[in-house]
Length: 340
Image 1 (cartoon, helix red, strand yellow):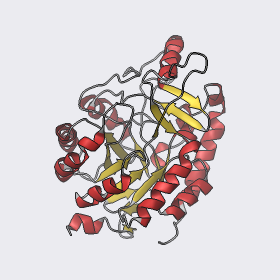
Image 2 (image 1 turned 90 degrees about the horizontal axis):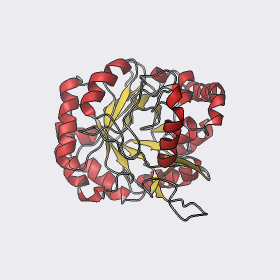
Image 3 (image 1 turned 120 degrees about the vertical axis):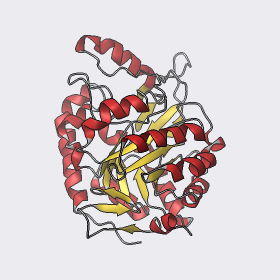
Image 4 (image 1 turned 60 degrees about the vertical axis):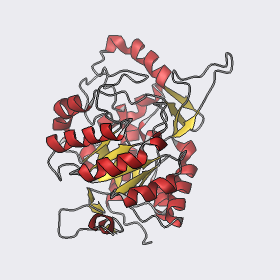
């Protein structure tokens, strides 16, 4: 067993270092992080139409989270099924809402999205966004369609970001919104890209793949932790026309509807003797949600669409939603999960 694998077997608290918790070699400020995409790149270019940043984030101190996870960034800029533009003006609101309607829809118990990895590309992110988020503890989410692309992404981050300056890189090798079977490349990605990284690596698991097998591959190749789970592949049709609600057809289901699935995956990973630290996500909104995931075997939890999304009129209540998240932060900062 390698030193990296031994280090990842247990969640430990480093009492000799700065306050926080450690998941293997990943340092978090506390056990509550944010999920990929909901807060864009962690900072916005426009104050009025802050595309990529949930309006609720204006009322929450992002630097207090255990870590803030970026939207998935690729080697080259990608329009995906949405846009890379993030400097929308108020007069452009109708056009923005139309685009959102093709990539994000509220459904029973959650949200269906197919943004398709729309992002500005790794070079623009590292140049224009990351330097403005250094007060936050960052998990950079990266995605690609080959081991070579992941190696390129890792090398670019290594060059721009000193070791220890971010919490981790999250490898998104499980997104359904880009119409690609990641089973074809996952072992090559882990074998080639993980050893090159100067930063700890998190593997994001899909409940629609063989997540136990992927978790074991992750442990074999020195991954530091797992994110469980990515969104669940779903479909909604217009009942009048039979056409898909989303431009991509299929989309990723998130929110309250997938919480039982997320809990099942975490528990099954632990029942399968997967010992890597787990960051659990899926339908988390309250302290009780967090405790359920901790009892299932998670070491940290992540707030996604259940906390950051609202109907467009509902964003008028953003100060209230923000207060709820701040209260959850306070409780998690002082909480120790049950021993396993």
